[in-house]
Image (cartoon, rainbow, N blue to C red; front, side, top):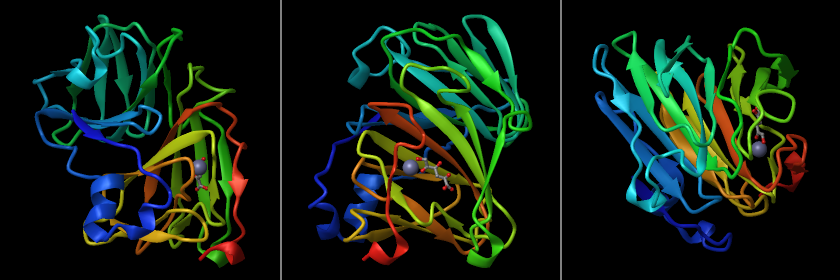
Length: 275
Ligand SMILES: O=C(O)C(=O)C[C@H](O)C(=O)CO
Ligand SMILES: [Zn+2]
């Protein structure tokens, strides 16, 4: 488990390209046969990738930054199958996940194992501290409500699906969903926002290998950008905008941890205020 420390908003504009990437970009966490995780001190979120090979399940183990006997002793977890399909067993109960489905695993679950059905199955993991146990449950991509946003004329037509939130799968603090851009649309979250009470991470996927997303970060009046490839994530501290334009349409998992779970508790930023 890699550790990332928190940064002050005044530091971000001073980072060069490598500095921005070291602090905020999470790459290469999908490695066949491995579970790779990153612990960020921003709201103590753990994000990661589990890439089991068919017939060789992977078990989620605790790690020294957690100082716990098992991973979910004081945490909750959401898992999204971003490629392929598979099964996750939680304390012996099997949960089948189709592509883009989400499994929420409640605090106190001791034994979590990832099984791949396909050669290229990839599970994205997002975990926050939790001091209450909520039931483990699955949300199906095709069954949750769809929020339509944006317009083709501004190249930001997209579908927002909320999986773990106040009116969906209940959790202690974790909030998570998936947003999918319509063909020909490239902008997410524009106009952008911050939310002072939550850290958010975006994991971009379904982006062709020869395309990139230019992800905007930093305080609204002092932005920088990070060039992101398929299946890479960006950590956005509470003071940072998190928005991006792709050279192609794409899908992303957005996930948050922090003070509240109110999706609309956002500080909106007008396009004209950005610098
Ligand atoms: O495309 C969007 O707009 C989003 O998906 C926004 C995220 O849901 C978000 O940033 C929630 O805070
Ligand atoms: Zn947000």
